[in-house]
Length: 284
Image (tube, rainbow, N blue to C red; front, side):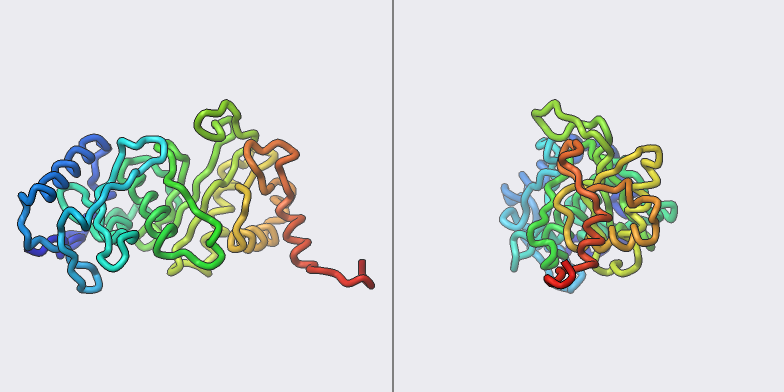
């Protein structure tokens, strides 16, 4: 039996129909996994990848992933590639297997541009973009030291939707929110914490649009932060943004939590220093 061949054929995708019921989803996934382990499902069940390759649906090929770092009870059942067991190729949702690309799609034309993450389905989209796509499929040399952990269950985030697909996201830490578990220290300014745009949509100014949206969202704050360390790609985004928006140059800082003055560095100053480059003795 072939499973997953008609995923998305009806034009309906998980994010459009998934109920806000993480516990119910987990129970259904556990029941399916138990059936696989007990051999209660057909041995002929396979999942067809977009490449045409077929993956046998059996217990050794599936595993549970923690959706949120602070809510271990929220889990996703995923199917991994036979060639690379660290690569997720499908997710079990609403009684069916969905290719990761279909999990990132929507049939709702109202999902367009940057939209705040609110529903359980949108949390799953955020996880796939963050952990599966950025974390495994689309890492670049610039990202070698940059790893995004699964976000918290209440992470403030916006997903970037283009042509009915999720192509990026950014997350923020609000002023006054806790810096981490087990600490009473709070952020002293709003901070853009993580950001990502898929390779297929880079070079279109979407990173700059995210940074502009972040600054506009917190337009009344005198200072805004971008989490340290800023990647080379993000520095290029900051440079383009600040060249186009000089009014934001004094407001944007690279910060370590919680963002006290001794933990801030001027992004615009660093951009200028990088533009100047190393100087010889004659120009010192």
